[in-house]
Image (cartoon, rainbow, N blue to C red; front, side, top):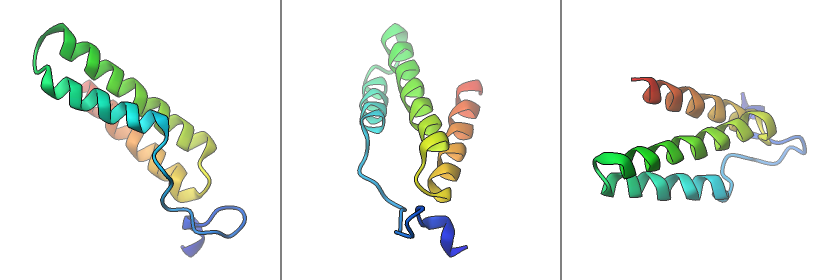
Length: 85
């Protein structure tokens, strides 16, 4: 279980600085909260979903530890489920 948080070199890999997709996600999410209704909200919400989907896909495919890949899969599943309901 301890190895789930380590990269291939044995270094702890739980936290990484936020990458550009996460910054965009939080920006679009905040902007969609400000534009509560209408076309602007739909566009900003779609952009937020797209950026978090890309982030999670990259974590699944390029994550530096098993924890990061699992985190990407969980975030993607939650994002898709929230988009459906």
